[in-house]
Image (tube, rainbow, N blue to C red; front, top):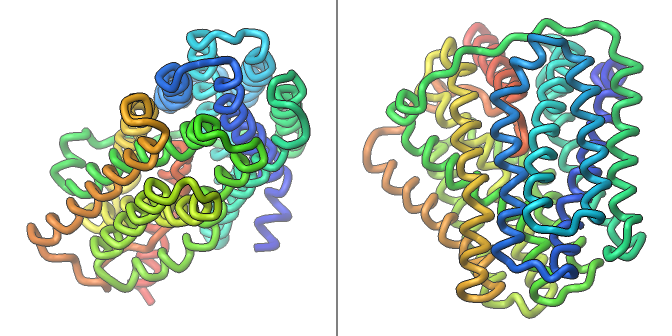
Amino acid sequence: MFSVLSSAWALLLGIMFLQVGNGMQSTLLGIRGDLEGFTTLQMSMVMAGYFAGFLFGSRIAPELIRRVGHVRVFAALASFLSAVVILFPALTDPFLWCAGRVIVGFCFSGIYVTAESWLNEAADNENRGKALSLYVVVQMVGLFAAQYLLVLADPGGFILFIIPSVLISLSFAPILLSISPTPAFSTAKPLSLRQIMKISPLGCIGMFLLGGIFSAQFGMAPVYGAKVGLSVAQISTLVSMFFISPLVLQYPIGWLSDRMDRRVLIFIGAALSGLGAFIGMIYGETFIMLLIAALLIGGMSNPLYSLLIAYTNDFLDHDDMAAAAGGMVFINGLGAVAGPFITGWMMGAVGPWGFFLYLLVLSLAMAGYALYRMTQRAAPAVEDTDSFAMMAPSASPLVVEYAQEYAIETAQQEQES
């Protein structure tokens, strides 16, 4: 662990600043949109813009890096990102915000791809697993910490937009000044979506549903909080609960997944996430119950990302795992783009509690489909399954490929020993 920190501390620090800025601006827009009188449907469009840009960027960024190099892509996207974030309070129109969020999502996607390739270069075969775990922890800690900066100023002013812009700008200094070698860059040729669906229907359907669940947590939770009249401090605390519980539960869920039928664990995780949504829907008027609901939803749904990829790997040859990663991330991204739109429509149709109703429906759909798949084929023997690699739902296809390569190496070492 210390060897990873000594070689990549500046990179991880920069990534944390990026995530603080990302988490701040996302929650802040949900609060500010309510102050500006935007409708729930308009805010769902704004929040979906980020995931559309991220999905588009994950396909384009690798080609940009191949053409002009890591440093130029990193610096260019950083400039756009910092500028757009600080312009939000001056351009208070839902369509302009949506366009801005598309740019933000695109920039973050490209920045993640660039930073993650440097992170992989800074690690070796012995500590790559620790590096990936630290990367996930840093991302979650950044999103968690971001929520508590929102109480520093009035969300109706400019200060809270200046802070994430400054943090995003500062994040590039430790990365660009400390990373000297430019890493070799390549990505695997992806499997087609039809191939992946045939190999693992549960993996594909689960990833699509999970994309919708995660985008609702990340984008629409602050909109829900504003619509039910929570204070800024309460909204910050509520959103932070979605990100703190995965830090605690990722490892034990990963440990269990290597020792049992992963479909059972997917069913349990999705069912408990649904229970959290049910608690929020029925007892949402009590703030402490809202926090319990968020802890359950976030703690159960976020580790499902790594779990679904690990389950899909159980039916793939090692040579195909990295190739399948891009397709799985793309499926997750499609669900993430659709998520805010559907959530906004449901909140507009039935009221703010439609936020939890949406999460309940998707969680129960995943749990039910996991049960159905258990009747369709036998589970692979536990000793034949590959290792669980911890990843976050906000990961780019590149870091998922690196995690797949690490899982392959770990599985091969275990077989040899």
